[in-house]
Image: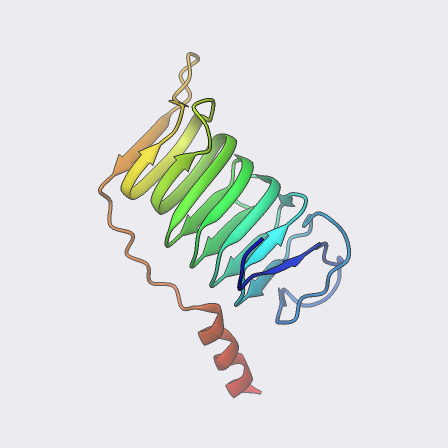
Length: 171
């Protein structure tokens, strides 16, 4: 899927470290534990991210959804593509692509786009440095939906590579 990426199936066991360092343990199709995955390469999650997170220096693709407010999150140095989000937090340096809908989610990127004119944004906050291009935003029942464009990213997160270098220096 990505020339320099790493495709895998992921489900972390309920015990273990809070961070899974390179290489990742691959077991099943969904990421459903309150754990964080750190990868330098691209990441493909074949299921959902539910109450967990992915931190990656490259692109991230989630073929399912990113769910559960304040617990499901992605921070990526490349593009992020996901089918849908619900109550998630996604930040990336490039483009976030939503295939179906984003419900009550916080999305922040250089650009935010819907894969089709049918992509819906219902509630939440979208902040983009360059553009937001989705099918429909807001809702008839009044879910607060905030779209902000021309907002600088102010990306101040260290890369996964820097974090891993720091972890190996501490050992």
